[in-house]
Length: 155
Image (cartoon, rainbow, N blue to C red):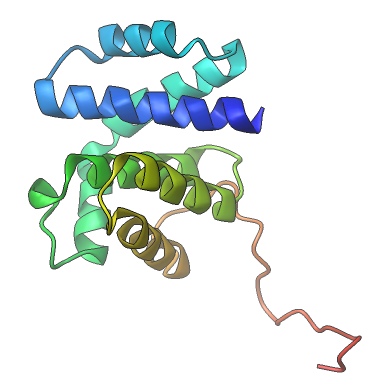
């Protein structure tokens, strides 16, 4: 299933890229990507949620990106980086995927489709968003409150 979800994220990014760059209808683009990617049904549903949910929250996600990447106006960001970040923000907020998995997957997608600096940029922005509790993270399994004591080392 992990491989299927990664393929779903890549198909979602391709769809978001096409919608962003060319302005094609999201519904048609989603169907084309699903036909081309031939991912299993659960992954296809995940891909559709990623695309539709991301598109429904563009303005809010762009404001978050602007806040944590102030030296890069969103409209000047590479299209891949911008959409990887948007998609990861949606997944953090709406899916039960653990935070580390969302960030790692976003970095992997950025490595595949982005430029040389994309993985580090994506990791930095998402890390800052999560550290600063900017959004309510649905799959957040991080420990809260007192730090975990490792009794083996007496700390």
